[in-house]
Length: 279
Image 1 (cartoon, rainbow, N blue to C red):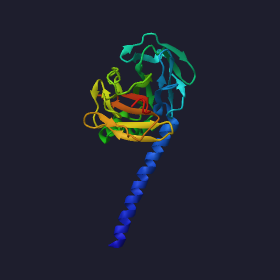
Image 2: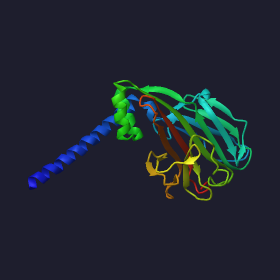
Image 3: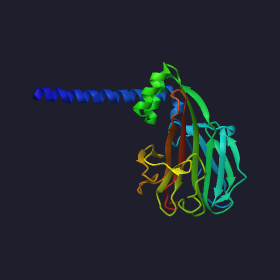
Image 4: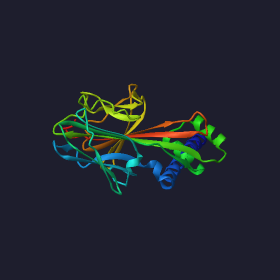
């Protein structure tokens, strides 16, 4: 009886180890063969505290690891761009393209919280059959979706599309990123919005509505990453002890009605500074 129990425990350990190895293999294959899918797109200002009259400079970049700058957007990839300071729209915005980033430039014309929000145009592509399982693993697809695709695909590539939705919040003179103007949605398909007068609390919106029970990443500049889930109201909280520059991130996958249709990903990031002057 004891030998059977030991054998059963060993079998469970081997099965668990095999699953872990499979996940690691999929992840490595995913990163090496399809790095574009794992790219994080974010905005990173030269600084988060500005004075009235300053020329604000914000870098928009895609890379494998925040806060490293990788490659810059082209201006023609931008579909929506909005810039506000204390709720007042800033129309005079310029762009400067560099290899590692697309820089957004505008003048700090008044005091308050500066909000810069950009959405990219939809991009299309294919995922090779050998990488489909890695993609499903990344988006945490359910078994029904995975099985239906494999039965219908017959070895054909997966069709996918994606859009990036990025924001950053900065201060011109003294401000709070949880003030009234900062707590207004920018109208992006997927975005993080601070909750008014509630420090460290944010809501994740999809098409203007709270997204409940959804995964959120919190990446610091020291490469440490924390994971959260929104509650039933789409709200989550950043731990009060965290400090410095932080990138919030989340992704939503829209599964097509037809199995062999296009799987669309919306990626959202928000970069903020957790200094006491901005909380």
